[in-house]
Length: 280
Ligand code: ACK
Image (cartoon, rainbow, N blue to C red; front, side):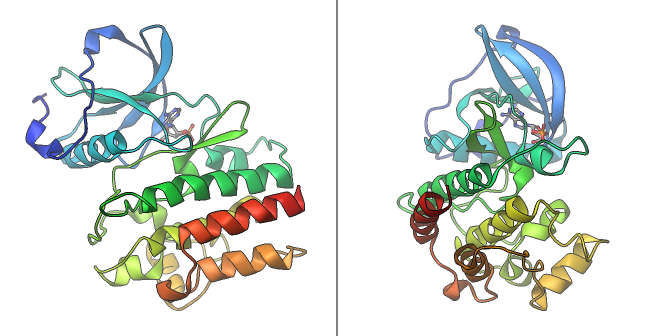
């Protein structure tokens, strides 16, 4: 395979070049929006290695390396370095032994969790995203927030945002994002001019999902296109029975059709920290 083109990471912070020979790859843990993820051992610690195998994945790889190398926050997965010279091209990051929040919420063997956990996950996600949006000189927009990209550690108590392959500090028309339609703000698929408020929309859907433990738009089913059409027409997940009004208000504000009416992520973070104290 051709070695990685360094020009594609122009503007990146320092990223440690890791020697592939120092990595012992173990089992495959899944597939991200691009690349295959493995558990591996590097310098005696467990790490997650995301390996790309096609030319088409190189661009997303370069974006993820560049964006992850700029960030440092306890709710964002840590990047240790990357192997860019081959023979394998891969990203080496913190290993989250708890897997993704999506697995906890929706895997057939049901894992029990409490409202405290649900609110804490939503708060930690808001904290990580608020940090991204506060970045200078421009906010970093994640653009693909969803439970498969929220990883858990420490027995499921700590949450880390991952998958920065589509993150951007400007709005760029998103294509090829079929898997994420259920969390995607309407303006993302109708215009090329959107802001960090698209992450706030996704967060609102995630709040609904952790409280209802249902897959968003399960009632619509079918293709990504049907979901996008419904969201475009203003359809949202059904309100949750017995949901405290304060939480219901917050999620409905976050998924408002008009991004201007949605709160900022730092406001969401502030409201959520207060709500966590009220409900836990
Ligand atoms: O749901 P999962 O078990 O957790 O499957 C997905 C898959 O790879 C695609 O994202 C898993 N994954 C991704 N990054 C990591 C990581 N840093 N540590 C552990 N698992 C990861 C994720």
